[in-house]
Length: 179
Ligand code: KFV
Ligand code: CO
Image (cartoon, rainbow, N blue to C red):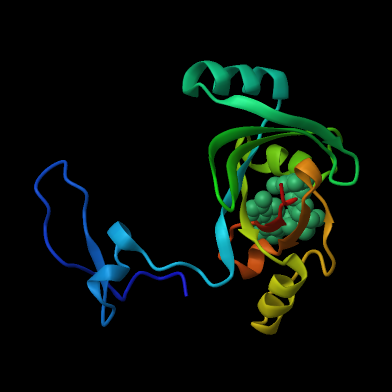
């Protein structure tokens, strides 16, 4: 599922140009230039990044990339203090960097930091209906961390899929609050 054996290089680009890849048997309109849309995911809602010091990390993202904080929150259940920094705002919802500092060493982010250090912790995909998406994914045999949605950033309903069944990537489904 995650192997790239069925990907072929369609043409060698000039140096510095964007490479165009094409899957066997799939028309060119499905390349990166004009990709097909997912029936399930509406966007990348956020990339979650484990950090040791939230305030320091916020300053670094603001100074280096010019991002601004939309919301901060302490989520006791998840064991994190976190900040959402807006990258792009477009229908059907924004995309963010989510900075996550553990408030307990035995929390998911605390354990992750101890094992791996700072870095990308999970990807959150936007969905229209988190319960429907969970049911459809469970039917594919993917282990759910959350059988029911929980409270997430900015009032969203969220649910996690187990990284051992998703190619090593902790994956979160996010049904954002409609504005
Ligand atoms: N990415 C990839 N692999 C991971 C991982 C991660 N983030 N976290 C753990 N693993 C691997 C880990 O390397 C280990 O593999 C195995 O999962 C068990 O890890 O090959 P190995 O060494 O066996 P443990 O023992 O550290 O963790 P465990 O107690 O089993 O829990 C794993 C899991 C996925 C069930 C737990 O981390 C979890 O419940 N995660 C979901 C909740 C979460 O991460 N919350 C923090 C973010 S809150 C958030 O994003 C919010 C509020 N929001 O709105 O967006
Ligand atoms: Co998240």
